[in-house]
Every structure is written in C-alpha cells, then in structure tokens.
Image (tube, rainbow over all chains, first blue to last red; front, side, top):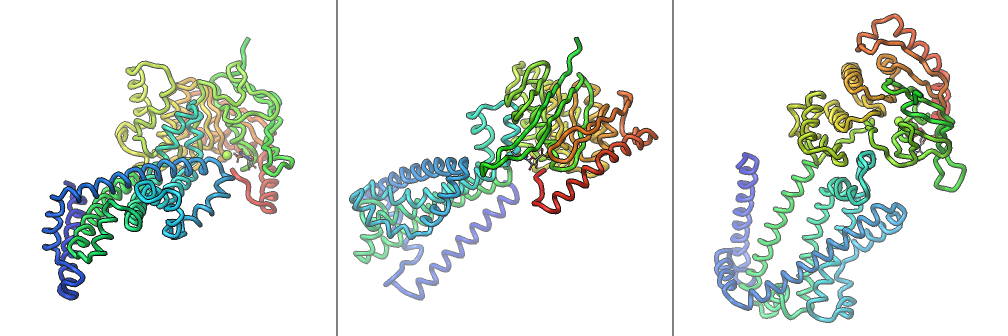
Length: 249
Length: 272
Ligand SMILES: Nc1ncnc2c1ncn2[C@@H]1O[C@H](COP(=O)(O)OP(=O)(O)O)[C@@H](O)[C@H]1O
Ligand SMILES: [Mg+2]
C-alpha cells in the first residue's frame, strides 16, 4: 500500500472510532428510550441478518434502487448529452432543470402515488426523479466544457460521428459525468428509501417505518446502521474513483 | 507539367451571422500556390483570417467562393489524407499517455502493426520524448505537450504540414530551438510546410517565402522571398539579410496592424 493510501485508511479508522465513541456517549446521555449502544446494535443487526424477512426487504430495496439508478443514469445521460450538443435548447431547459432540482421532491409524491399506485413502480419513480436531474446537469456541463480543439483534432484525423463520441467526447466528459453519477447515486438511494417509507409494504424503508410505529428501537438502530454503512462505503469508493479520474483526465 | 502542391483560386470566406444579417467577411479573395517541398509562412495582424485560411486548406471549413486544391484534387469541407495540422492551443488528449496520443494519429492509417510501432518509436526519438512515452500530458510542460502534438502529426508522415502559431505559447528561447527542430524535420521529411505566426523573426528565420496579410478581410498584400539555403538554422538571424527581410515584413505590416488596432479599440476585441 502506498503511504497516501495508508494515511487515508488510518483517517477512516480514526473517523469510525470517533463516531462509535460519540454514539456511546450519546447513549449514556439520552438512555434506553431513544437509543441503543453500539455493541447491542451490532449484535441485534447480526441476528436480524439471519432472518428471511430481512433478506426479503433488502432484496426488494436493492431491486428498486438498481432499477431507479439505471433509469436516472440513462435518462440523465440522454438529457445531458442532448442539451449539451444543442446550445439553444440548453439555454431554454437548463434553468427549468435547476428549478425542478430545487423543488423538494416529496411534494411530488402524492402525484406519483396516484400515477403508479402503491409498490415497486412508485418507489422506482421516486428514486429516479431524485437522480435524473443531477446526472443531467453534470453531463450537460461536461459536454459543454469539452475543448473544441479536441473535436477539431478528431476531425483532422478523419473520425466519423460514432468514433468521435466514443474516442473523444466520452473520455473528455467522463470525469464530470462520473461526479454526476456519484451525486445521482446518493440522491437516488435517498429517494428510493423515502418512497418505501411512505408508501410500500416491503423494503428497508418500510421496515424502518414499521419499527418506528412499533417503537422498536433496536430495529430502528439496526436498519439505520446498515444503511449508513452501505451508503458510506459505496460513496467513499465512488469518491476515490472520481478523484482518480479528475487527476488523470 | 509542374503543378503546385496546394493551390487557392479566388478563395473567400464569409461567416454567416447568427442574426441573419450580412455575415462576417473574414478572408479573401486569395490566390496562392504552394510549391512542393517549400517552407511557406504567413504573418498578419490578429483577427485577419490566418487561422481561417489554414482551416480552408485543411478542409476543416469550406470556402464561400473560390477553390482550394491539394495535389490537384479539390477540397470542399472534407479532410484529405496526407495533411497534418498542429494548432496553437494544447490539443493533447489528457486521458491518453504520450505514446497513445501519438498512436492516435495512426488510427485511420492502414499500415501494419509493426510499422506503426516503428513509426511511433521514430517520432518519439525525433521529438525528444523517448523518456516520456508512458507519461500523461498533465505531467509535461507546455513545450513538451506541443512536441507531443507535433509528433502526433508527424507520425502520419504528412506530405503537407499546417502549423497554426504552434509556438505561440512558448518563451522566446524555446521558440528559437523549436524552430531549429522544425527546420530539421522539414529537411528530413521533404514535406511542404505552411506556418502561421505572429512573430516576424520566426517567419524570417524559417521560411523560403513569407506572405503578409492585410487586416480583415485578409488578403495577401506582399510575398517576400528569403533565398535562404535549405541547410539553415537559428544562426540565420546573425545575417545582414535577415534584418532586411524582417524590415520589409514590418514595413508591409505596420499599416495593417495600425488599422487593426484602431478597429479593436473601437469595437469588441476580435477572436484570434
Ligand atoms: N467560426 C467562426 N464564426 C464566425 N466568425 C469567425 C469564426 N472563426 C473566425 N471568425 C472570425 O473571422 C475573423 C478571422 O479569424 P481568424 O482566422 O481566427 O484570425 P487570425 O487567426 O488571423 O487571428 C475574426 O474576426 C474571427 O472573429
Ligand atoms: Mg489564429
């Protein structure tokens, strides 16, 4: 391992230890009514992971998330590339995208529920609408910032439109697009879970909501812990790739 | 019959205006013949249409009027084989290593893999990039990156090399040295070279013939022959005739540059 990698691994460990300590301290402060200490939570989580119901909820969430993310990325790329290449429509639609982006998506949820009903499609739609716009905006910017000289160089070397996209436009825009993917990933996950919390009969979001309803503090803590660990691990991985791309491209 | 390598007849370029008005008359009419193997330079005030002229010859843009011929074939907005272009701006692909950047030049050229390796090795050595084959452009200085771009152009063994202010971003000493390299390349490859520069001394040192362009719309107002021997390098600047050449260039150019200055101090700055 390089010394830089070692340093960041050490920083991560320090951060985790700090968070655990803060958690334990908070527990001593507020007591059993609202929290469980780290050790109890981990033990409970381990037990939870041996139940079939947990895996059913997890796979439901992962499916919804995977589909939502695919839709967000595909649609975001199409919108971003389309607007990126067409200056005029970008001028028209970019402010609209930014405006829609700043609407709290939760206000759209009743409409989505009416359109899709309870269950999988509504969750997916809710996850996807969180992710599409950041992917689209980052892609739009990425395409707009491609240096024209690189395209000209491609033309001088006789590249056709398809090769131009594959060998020049895509690699030139990749780091910025990847940043969009990273942001889209986080927001789509939030959207999917929110969707499950408010209108679903399965999934981790639903499990969390039921736990809240039953005031099952262990379960609340366990699901939260799992979600935090998942989101933090993937985000850290994506951020590392993102940084690498930005350094090299 | 001896035929010119590149030949322009009555070439003009008008950029259509986006608001549907008159459009911008950037260039011409221009008549110009480049002889096979000659080193031809163009000087002119900024915004006079030099880059436009180069792009017309490269086939990157098409003429509004007139014809451009390369090796007897008409170019009309299509990019002919056998022409290599080096731009002023840094045109390295940052996601490719130096070696892969150079190999990019060969992707459309039908030669065997072995031959490609040989050519890439050859230009790496020629441009002094041998130790940097696996480096990425971000790790190199501006001068080195420009070498990569020149190498990427040379590797296709072009019969016509178009250079658009290729050393504009470099300091004076580096420019003189790069000039020596270009002269060496020109002798080795036997290619026709068309160089755009804003530096009169650079043009006077490198070229067989130097065209002076008027302020926009650019026209050729003077063509100066230097009569340098083919075996020359930057020491040419010590000659008495060198002073005479630059003096003549400046005389032709002075008035045009003043016109451009007067125009740009009134209107918005021209894109160069
Ligand atoms: N694609 C274009 N569309 C409109 N105007 C252009 C375009 N390219 C160049 N021009 C204009 O044509 C003139 C000549 O430009 P250029 O050939 O780049 O000049 P130079 O290279 O001599 O500085 C400038 O006024 C410039 O603004
Ligand atoms: Mg120019």
